[in-house]
Length: 349
Image (cartoon, rainbow, N blue to C red):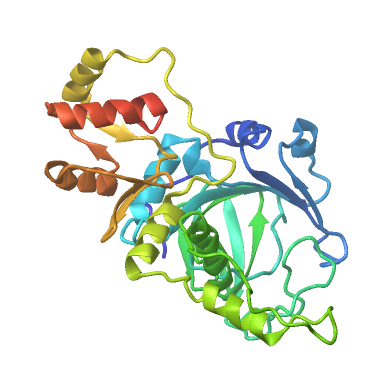
């Protein structure tokens, strides 16, 4: 999509990006490879990065900063320009900086991705190939037999959309930055494991194993069929409903990632000063906050929240817009927003 975002040339310069890459609270990766010997000289270093590493020019390299939307308000705004996709599917905004020839090699993703070109230019080779075999031993998921069928040169503001499993290889033409908008696509295995862990905390099975009619066995080491029968009947009490699934999905999709932390304001405004600020400027959710709702109700940062019926429409609008306009909030709404403010989940806009 040529000039998908007219005039766009990135959200931050490379010095600011490098500062983030060196921050221990920011998820980053530094990747170097030799373009003439793909698959034999890959090197990946997880952050925090060292400044000296980000000055090299002799060999192609790139640095990836994950979750830029968590650290830069403009990045959060850019991510939510894609909310024609449900927020429950939006993952994060990643930015990659590369020197001339840098990239992460030919690969594929298991999810949809939009690749928005920032500063500089990047050449993309793409293919809808069925051969997804990977280079053995490489520290990245590099395609072993990449056969590009199309080549595109992206300028600032241009955007490439790739469906899941499309092979692609981006190579920097000079220094450049690319902004990647990714989507959540959990596997069935991941969902199953997370759901069972969630269910375990809420499970309450009655009874205790007992065998008053135990008989002498020929071999004491045998686990007898009657024992297995009884345990099977006990485990048959494990049940779940659609309501359980809906509640799990709300908790799971709003759960902050492990490296995300909330910081209460210091010093915090007093309740009356807070109410005046909301009336004057409105209220905005913190970029790290996830607020979603479904038939199971509202979920905030991994937990279900109880809402009076009178507030549901307002909080649904806040979840959608990520902010509320200046408003004279009633006592119940003010109290709730103030508590979220004290927890670091949001603040007067």
